[in-house]
Length: 631
Image 1: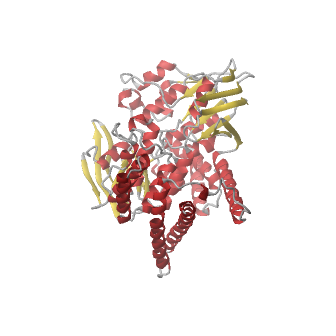
Image 2: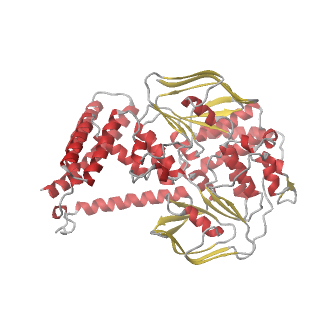
Image 3: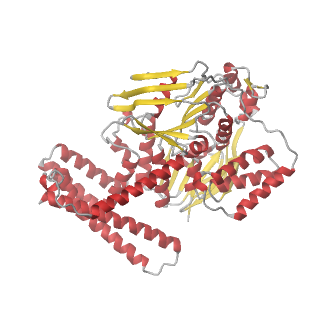
């Protein structure tokens, strides 16, 4: 069933043609990614779909009566709204019921008067009428997974990252038939990204999104649309399939030979050996790409331009942190942290949002001072710090002038010099863009230009704070190759798991309360180890629960404390929730035995049935606990 049809779309800004006669469609259940170089027109296309811009010609048609939600890269809110009002802003009857229930519950907790109890009772009846108890549970799961709390605070008090998560939660709560998203993983920590991947797959959400998160592309997307040279190419597969077929296409077209030969070959080799891709690959696909490599090898070899910068000399002493502590009020970032950096170390910093990753980098570079302890930097160390804040680029400057202001050239490892125009070309700024004004660059192009100003300073210790945000796939691959060849020290903070896996040899995990865990391995290996650890802990917990205690402690016995007003209403709601879940379970069970032949549909029903059964068990245990307190 077609949800969106785009036919023969044209768009230009002055002399710059963004796309010329592009057409595509999205059907129910498809999860489609739009990829392109920065400045190629991805965001413009999304704005046209949203109605925020107008195409020069062509048609955009959504299926009648479908709900469509948009997640913008920089979402806008009324700053005077509370978080709760920002979340529940639609006319959805179910949302209205849940919103009324939550507001009434909050009022009743503040003032348990008869009037507020009556208001809460009416709100519960609204939720019951909409059969919305399961929906409320889903809402709570979304808010918890995206770390959204304190619903009464004003939107104006939120950071940019918190607003992006708020906007993401809002569109997920709306449950549209089609979700259109611009960089949904920006400002999410790694746990949140993994949760979002599972959410989209589990709920079979129909998507059109712009993202440069390659694991996300590989794990979630069923199709990839590539916008290049004003044309649109469709690849019916994930990221690995995309890079394979793109290289094949470019070779067959006889275009950009060096890029097909070098970039995509290296990229595919990495995809096939990376930690999360150790399963057996299709032999036919491996053989096909090997034939492409052989064909390329048979052509005339051309010298590949590599960005092997002549790095400043590193002395014996690099960087030492001795008993370093740092806290902001009760938020402890580091507590007596010790580490001595060695030459060539490549360390990734991981941890939840708010754990202090950027503060850690600021301490190293001297932008923040420790509360106690000592940070000693070697005399030969030259930091190159790419921060999230970036630098202010003057709009009246030309692109090449920004680079020339830093230096006239970069000395290369072989004794040659790389001129600013050559460096810009290497990082996807062709000659026709180099003399444009900075004001004409897209957000991603400005980030890329800032990155070049950092590399131009010839550092021997690179510190990168979210360098992959808003960079296109070509630039990411170029940057990764440079960093793989870089002989100095490297510390990086990134939510891009692919980037971390490819470049970091070890991790500092900021676990909270000042604790830092050192893990020797990739991020994916760390996550797999943590999942296995949780699995074993879960089994041990189940085993413990299976052995009934001889005598429960009075302090642990819920019947020894009085039930609160909030728990009373939770208790009343649980009976209705359990009844609703039992009804769903019965319907799914009946559907399973009705003779369905579609294997995927049967599998989806079985997964859903298992989830509902687990939910019923949890609700029944909670009901028993509250019933003891009530009695």
